[in-house]
Length: 74
Image 1 (cartoon, rainbow, N blue to C red):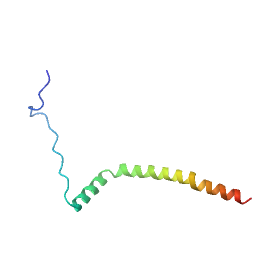
Image 2 (image 1 turned 120 degrees about the horizontal axis):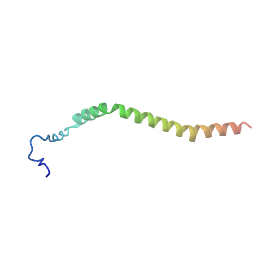
Image 3 (image 1 turned 135 degrees about the vertical axis):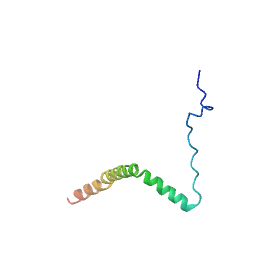
């Protein structure tokens, strides 16, 4: 027999979702608070982005330019 969880007060229910902030300043503050809570994750996303961007720039721009330069010197 399954326990009745809707009528059982000992079961803790999830709190209601927080209200969304009203107004641009409140939304900005909520966004900053969210960024501060997730800054470690965003830091590593940024490091990964910079590494991929650097590899692509090196391989698609700088190495071909160097090869063109070296071959043009005759």
